[in-house]
Length: 472
Image 1 (cartoon, rainbow, N blue to C red):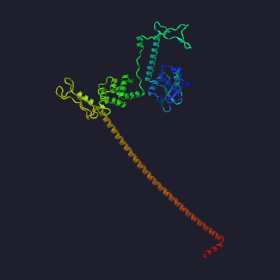
Image 2: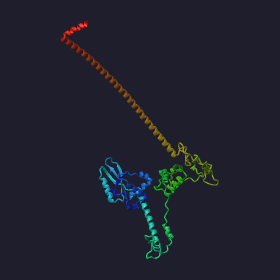
Image 3: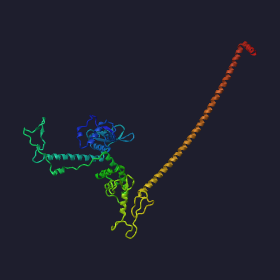
Image 4: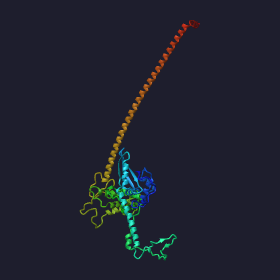
């Protein structure tokens, strides 16, 4: 997001009316507003960078940012550009809440900028409005309680404002102004409020605030809950306490694996499927998925498996065997022979995950339960896709090899033609040089002959001398 200028820059300080606006935001929001006002126009605002710089969580700053938007200290607009039809988000930050006229003027000024096709105001989200409303109610409740306490102090029968310790001035020399020089009355002991008013003024103690590490761990555990559970958007205290209790005894990865394992092992997955019996309370199921097991006395037992050894828990196995034994005189228990002497129905087990099936039902083909069968089908489909991708890759490689072979052959042929043409050119140049030399020799011989004939015609005596010299 890019920051725009809301008003011409005047000063870097935050106005007092903004600092005193406790109904619109908390101290975290005030600090965030100060940080954003401090940056220059055109600054790319990233809540993640601000959170990392000041040691806050991004989710907390996002909530504070939403409260600033609700109070109109931050106006967020979305702009569609005419060049590429892309949308961008820009924010305008004000040191006091923006008025309707200022918002209209802002939208009009942005719409008049070049290359702007559409500009619209982006309202705050529903969660931001709810958070701002809760904060305002909380502040108003505290102010109301403070006013009631002050009213109780001033309305005590038989006491004046002076007797309650209020309304007396203090001189510069440190003495108390008693008025008329009379001696000061003895200080009255502090009055206790009536029991009924104390009970009315008593407030519910707020819950413990989670640290950043605890909040991150709880969030990772919550992401392990399946979407079919349809948990509410808020985090109930009972679920949060159950997650913290589980994390106090087990590492984070063990708790996450516990949630995923119990979801199908305890039959919740089949219950939410079409035609299933369904689940009653989503919060109750979530607590059951995450809370520690209290059945086994071994502290290292995790749903029948000893964590440090990775072996089945003997105490849990013994308890299962004890439960299978019939109890004398108790009806409804499975026995070796039921009333008519027929053997008790046996439950089949999945050959992959060993999960028992429903009593009285036949084992499906292949001996796999529904989740394992889906996993097997998914694995087969993935293997088929992998084989198809490998075949396509092999075809592409074969086509690439053929193309490379053709390219090499074309290069060889082209190189051969080039070398042959080069040799022909060199041979032609050599013949031309040889013929030129022969022609030059013939011209030189002809020129010598002509010169000798001319000399002989012009100087016959030299010819006789040369002939005698030649004969001698």
